[in-house]
Image 1 (tube, rainbow, N blue to C red):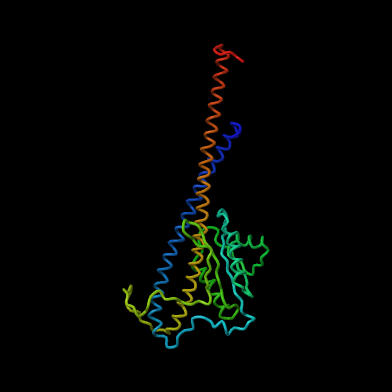
Image 2: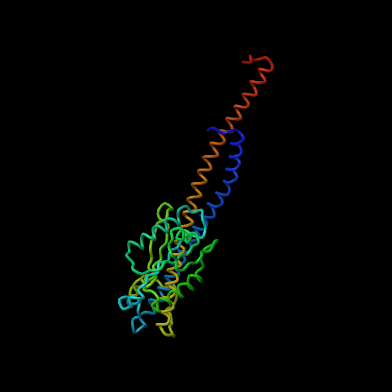
Length: 298
């Protein structure tokens, strides 16, 4: 490695100064990743409670509630598909947004959708689509620090549900990344609307109760509608959390690789600096020996 002693020392100092930053970013990414996973676990338990209530409400509804719109009956002029694509608000996560943009556009193209709109969450992903010249019909930033709140997800899905019920579009598909094996991320899709609830258990099968039997004094269908709204919100919130977990896992992996690379560079520079120091010491000893007449000067 051909570089001067001073250059090697300067570079070694710079890399050592960066190393704590890489470690801090890696730790923060791991922490955010773990928080997202814990929230997903809590959200699944939350949905199970709604599931239990729904199992008690459904037998009281005389007219079966309509679970989804009949798309075949919609006018062709309103047969629009909304693609909500989720990216990231911050960088340092490798090709997370570039891959998301490329795979989302491939997914839409291969699906053969005649009429659609592209909506984007995440400023970094928005810039990717702008770079590709893709028209974005709706955009929203993600939190720069922390995770999306459930209340925000509920407010958004309420608005989208109102538009759906007013026939503004016939389906709403969310495209996002989620964590795969080895901490990598993989592209996936989720149809948010029309929403079809899937009960986590058979109401005819007995299971341990967490509370006494419910006393329902209000209209059962009203309770059903409220629960469905929360199911839609929690489903979307899970998607946001899974996307955030994938983003932070990508950032953690990148910071881990950068930290490992910094360690290798430091080891190499330390060898260069030590070798140069030994060479200088040897040279000085030779000059002293020559000056004292112990060695012949050639």
